[in-house]
Image 1: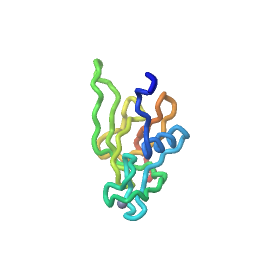
Image 2 (image 1 turned 180 degrees about the vertical axis):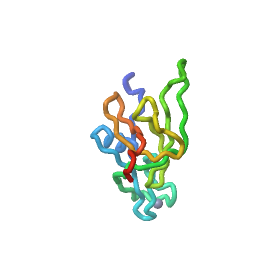
Image 3 (image 1 turned 120 degrees about the horizontal axis):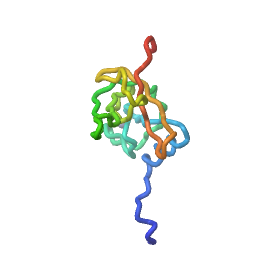
Length: 132
Ligand SMILES: [Zn+2]
């Protein structure tokens, strides 16, 4: 092994997940036998241990479960959200709007894939009035 081999490459399901993100697609897994959604990406269903996981495109709709602000000098650091997706999984993400307006625990949010930075990530914004 050369000195260039020190970083561990992403493997398996995680690699597939980020491959989708880089291609502009956001997908999560769903277990075929028990039909439950699975996130974070993994090789086996955490509920029934099946390896028969398919990739689905989530609705993007969710509810803010908790939120915390990354500590910063001006007390205005980025907001980290824990969101319960409609598909039944909980995931972490940032907020689209840096001012975080309308972002409260229990808020209905919509996910958006952000590919503008170095790393693809999922951001959330409050669902507009009237949208379901
Ligand atoms: Zn399962």
